[in-house]
View: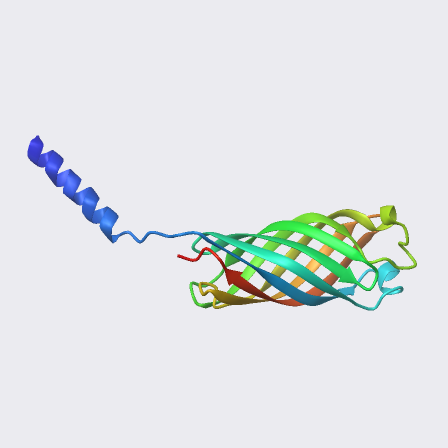
Length: 171
């Protein structure tokens, strides 16, 4: 019995030694981009708007991360705060990804939505892009997105952005 126990203990030790250990990490940074309204009432009043955001990426699993951003849209003083998931599609240093986010948003002010209540509401987003040097101390994210905001009207549009992230807890 002691021999069986010793063999099992040795097998567990060997299996544990060969198994790589993943260390989660976080990165934070800034993102700039542009958005283009698609629905008629919104695009009649604004052709495009700029966006600047503080972004965070919490790489919890080797290819899956929780993302967050808080942004400002201009002109028109819009803002957003969103939380989401991002899934890397390839285990490479330059990795394509898909993702989704949900949160709150105030679309930039225009003639169709000039009061805060007319332009504020929940928002959802689908996005995809490339994450460059994702496991480095400095990484870049190129992202295209499509976003829906439910305010007085359902506002939707697409956007493109580039972000730079700095890892503060990379092992």
